[in-house]
Image (cartoon, rainbow, N blue to C red; front, side, top):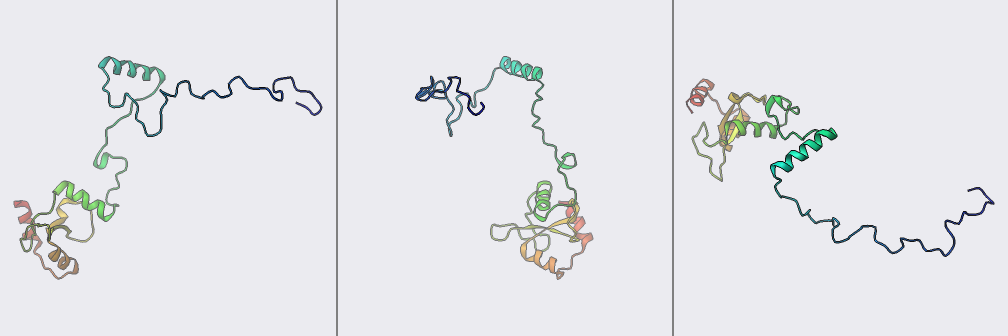
Length: 161
C-alpha cells in the first residue's frame, strides 16, 4: 500500500476477527502435552501393519534404520592403537575378563585388593598377550621397575590358564 491510498476494507478499526477466542488446536483433549507419552507407545504392531508401514516407507524413499553395530576393526569409529588408557583397559577386560589372581603373589581379587591388568612393555597396544594380572602392590612395583619377572615363565603360566 502506498502513502495516501485508502485501505481496501480488510482491517477496519473496531472490527473483530472471526477466530478471536478460538483455540489454535482442534481438540485439546487429544493434543500431545509435554511430559506425556503417546498412547500407542510400546504397543506391538501386527505383521500386516509392519508390512504396510514398510511398503509406505519404500514408496516414499525412506530407508529403514539399521541397528547393527559393527565391533572391532569393522566399526567406523575404530581407532586401533590410538586410544586412551581407560578405553584400552575396557577392551582388555572385554576379551580377557576381570583380573582375578595376581601372577606374582597369588592373591585373589578381593574387594579390598582388586587385581589389575598390567601392561608388560608399557607401550599400551591392543595385544591380548601383552597384559598380566597383578594385585595393586605388585602392579606398583612392576611400574616402578622393582619387580623382576621371568617373562618366559609368565608366558607358560598364561598358556596353562
